[in-house]
Amino acid sequence: MARKTKADTPRPDPAPEPGSRRRTFWLRSLVALAVCATAAGGLVGYRMASDEPGERPVTVDEASRLALSRLNLFQASPVAVKLTAAEGGGVEVRVEGVVDYRTRRGTGSYRITGANGPLDHGLVVWDAGGLGLAPEPAGADGPAWKQAEHIPRQGWSPRTYTADPLDAGLQLIAQLGADRPDNPLLLAQSGARWLGRERLDGRDVDRFSGPRAQGSAPDGERSPLTYWVDGDGGLRKLTMRMPGLGTPTAVEFGGRDDTAELPEAPWLTG
Image (cartoon, rainbow, N blue to C red):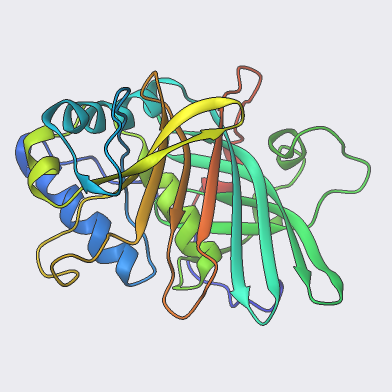
């Protein structure tokens, strides 16, 4: 992690665009940025009763559930997350932390391993504009957000997002929750597909490929984003295929963490 170059301190997420213009902008940005390995946003879908084999377009009911899923994630904040990103050459990065979608801020710990064992570890904070890294403070224990409280602003090494799998995954996480539902008709018309059903952590979930922005992929090809959603419309898992990597970046959501209090210091400027 220390090999990364520093950049400007991440800036707060700008105010969202209103109405249908905001929803259309989100959909186009979601797929365009994911394909470029700088993910923007996403949502998920759920269908309780289907015995149809193979993949197919989402139904009207499923599109409606898709439209509510980002709102459900927002309302569950702060949410526990786990990110696993393969960076090539046998290097894997794991992040465990929490995200608050009301502020679009996340705090966690990271571990980097290679083919021969551990390579690096520390704390990471992120928002919509970028991320910051810091060593774990000596003598501090407890969850990452509590350890982060002991690190002064100048103790963080901030940078804007790059195109590597870790950065793309963190940026995707930051953009997922929304304070209002999306447009279900737009989702249904944009290539979202039902892929199947399975069990995940003891719960029945449906698997969906995300919508595709026009021109982002040839007709018939899936979105690079895949979502697992339970019977309550809750996002349980998300994966993003990255160019040149056989293993997709994966994000798992563990539900609300009522104890989490994300620190302010990493995002202060000036």
